Structure formats: structure tokens, C-alpha cells
Length: 352
Image (cartoon, rainbow, N blue to C red; front, side):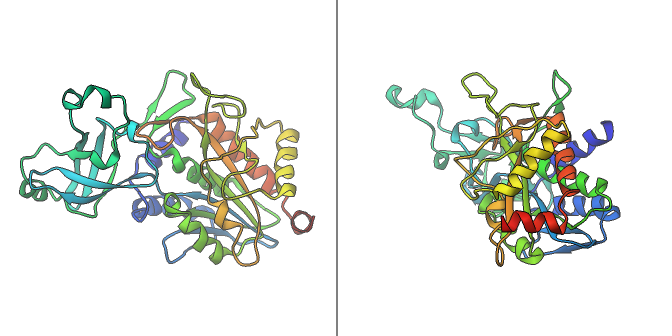
């Protein structure tokens, strides 16, 4: 577990918003190189590790990017204006520390807004608009900010620290969406042996900006089976609905999301396999988003697709929480299903 925790810490701590995934890609490529026969890339930068065997093409994918910001302007007073990259809820952004990635190194700043003391009383209960926010670098001018290396177009990521919480299975950091899915794909590539299929372990780019890397990588792979591994909702918190959405109760086999109604034969195979292997699982759904499977299953003439998610608390914030056993059980489930995906089974799934 100690070695895995280090990998999860290193992977989730890397910066990589959409269009800036190169550091993450290099880390993953170096890690999976001993476990694949070939590594290829699509023209957007998605990374594909191939285990060249016979049989149907099975694509499993986790996206490398995380939500963040991009600098759009530096004011004359040295404050940074920004564009959100990926979905952000304004209330979680206030008074947060950020890392600005410059050619000279990381520069820190904090989200600022108009002080509540000068907001009219009848307006204080309203949500603060993201467009009114800025990042305070602690400088006095645009010139001083630029001397630090700060420029428009640069990537900004949440400043966060990996932590093992009170229960050692509970892990906190930024970017679990979706470095935890990427970690699952990495571990599956490491453990998978003698499969009855060709396995394409894929790490996509720009998922948070419309599943862009999923589209191009799926056209590169041309899969028969498309499995997206992403982070899902954990609602086992005060005021939430924990049914099928809890930490520590296993991977979520999605009923649907806004980009995919899963292939029912493939979904049944996952459920039957989980039961036979005594792997805990949940049957969740997402009605406010989608996973890479939304584009993966539409490439060429189509593929049998499904989304498998690791429950995550506080998605799209500086500090999300996952459960280590959910990660482990997701790896176990994917490996167990892969062993069953021979040509006969895949033909039955597709033609049912």
C-alpha cells in the first residue's frame, strides 16, 4: 500500500488542466513503459499503452486533465483575471490559494473579491459571481507581476497537499477527477496478463472541456469495447443521499449519464462478475455530467460502452476525498471483466 500511496500522491499532485497535460503524460508514460508493448499518441496528446494480443479491441480510459484556471489579464495594479477551465462552483473558489505555473517556477496567489463589508446587506446572501473574482499575487503592479514570470495564457491549478486522513483509507488531494481513474488504468496495465483481447490503456486529454481527447483517441483505437473509468459522486455527507453513492462501498457501475446509456450486456457482465468475485459495487447514475465513454462508444461504427466510477467527495474543488478500497476494488473488477472479454463474449454483447 505504501508504494501505491506514493504513486497516488505524485500523480494527483501534478499540474495538468485541459491543454496542459504534458507533465502528467510524461509521468504516466514512464510508469507504464515496462508493462505495455507499445505507446502511441493521438494528435491532441492522449496517451495509449497497448498490450498486443489477439482478440477484440478493449479500450479502458481515464482522463489526465483536472479543472483549473487560465490567466486572461493582468491589471495595472498587478491583480490576475482568469477564465475557468472546466466546471467550477463559485462558492468553493473564495479565499483559496492557487499555483500559477510560469517559466520561472510556481507563483502563489489567493482568490479575492470585494469585501462583504461594502456589499449591501440585501446582496450578501447572493452567490458571488466568478466574473467578479481575481487572484491577488501580493504585488503592487503589472510590471512586478510580470517580473515574477506571470503572463496571460498560463495554467493555474489549486494549491493542495496530499493527506491521509483520520481513517487511513480516506485520501485527500486535488485532481482526483480524474487522476484516480488514470491510476486504475495504470495498475490494470501492470497486472493484466494473458488476456483474450487486445488491451488499449488510454489516458485522455481535455475531458473537462467536452471529452475532446476521448473522441480522437477512440478514433485511433477503433475499439469494440469502450470502458471509461472516472470519478463519480459520493453523497454520504450531511444533507446528501448516500444510496449507491458512498465512499468505501465499491466502484459505481453507472446506470446512465448525460453522454451514455451503457450497453446492457456489458453492464450485466460487470454486475455478474462483481457478484461472482465478491467485489463490492454500487449502481449509481450521473444526471449533471458525462464521462469519456460518451465519445468513446461513438467512434467509427460504434462500440459497446460503459462508465465505471470511483466515488469522490467534493468534486471540482481544491480538496476532494476518495477511499483507497474503492480504488483497489475498481482495479479488481476491471481485471476480472477483462479476463472474460474474448471474441465470443464480445460478439454476444454487441449483437444481443
